[in-house]
Image (tube, rainbow, N blue to C red; front, side):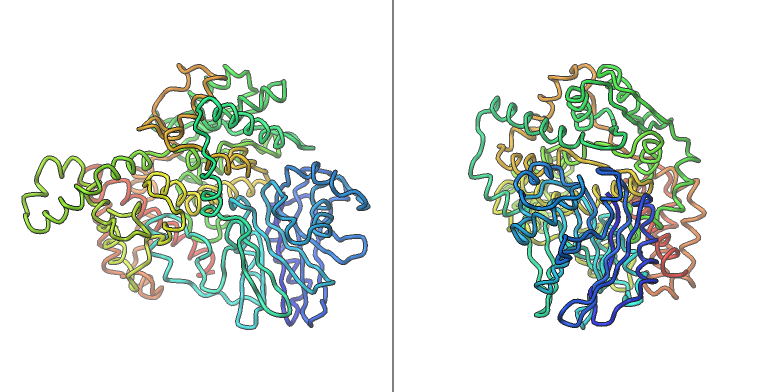
Length: 629
């Protein structure tokens, strides 16, 4: 686990600048570093650098950049390969000099070529140079657990890094803000791959390979959510007992692989089903108490620590909890932009950072339960999609009538399920049928921008070839929200403290098996995560587990209107906004003023408006950190 960076260019950046790029990643890998520049045969220069967090093979044998014995191959790598031992057994004849997974990848490439990536099971971002072919590959893991950014100019010079700040450090890079993504960012709270906040810098998409050769640059996906779903759904597992048994075994295998570490290991424990199941299985496999960590809140509405403590007691874990004061959390706000690199507004990033800081005091590796909601139907939106699909024909008719007969919108039916009718009436867009019903929000956000008409929808739902609304939305979330919000949040928060976070539920085999399960094994008419719950009950009592889902959130409305109010208002200065040239100074000022005046009642006081204000605040924090300075 670490950070990587480098370049492929006609004119080399200096070793000094490569070192500066790498130094910006020091928090990801404080144990070792390496920087090297090579000239390859078609007149280009390659720079590779890495910051190392030592997890496997703590000796100097794990130093990177790492080379094959004949120096044909050079490689830098961020992540963990969980099946490296099995792969190593298939690589007889290679003169291994270490016990780390990095060297296994070099040997695997020499035996199988670039198709070696299909044999990897893990989380990874890789840069590989093949001198014999004069080719460089950038590779990212299937789900997008590990980040990889790259800059490309008109001469096909490439600069890459694990974090955006390191890319921008290179003197080859000239970033320009991409105003087209700001509207969707305000609405979603994150910027989805392949976009970034800059026009000419991109995220390598999950499951993607970027090949740089003397003939040019090519991109391909070796693993894709939609393709894999359509392959595996042809082999549905219709017997529930069989499915539960097989899924449990896959989870056990996944967790067992992720318990391999040469440094202390623990687990995040929220008290919800996903993290509790992971901790239960890890405890069973290890045969001893594992270390678990929880963050608590003094406000009961947001506090799940009491439930986590009950789970820890029943499992017998070595449990540590820390309760956050408002000051603890707010002190973290100032540094968010420094570690997230581009605007990012999932407010749970704050407790995730503090949880990572807590865990790092005792361990260097943690397990988490991320992925359970997206794979197994854990969000309310999926249940809502089931309801919407049942009413899609009546909804369209009712909506059409409402445009003719004003009284329709006053009916009890309309008021009770207004959002359903709005969503199904937008079903004419087959590429975004699970995303409709929120046009009012789009109008508001566009009014705040000088350049409106943002692209709010992800218009590619047909790629999933799925008729059901709820399954389509799960797949869409796996493609967008999971890698670009959830996994981004956890990666930056944990790596800020050089803490490796492993996600057993996102194992390749578990993900692909989830595609074989019928929809009602996941969300059975509101019984969300049915199959995961039933596996969890084999380890933990229903009395402890059965309770409403709280999530890992903070009192955002309260903070924005009290402790953070002055800072938010500072960013509404009209002269500043006019110089910035992104937001409509008058419209933005009025929107923020109205929001602050509403208190806890009335339009403008709801969750979405708070999330929009938070996204705006996080944008300005980022802008001040990386543009004004």
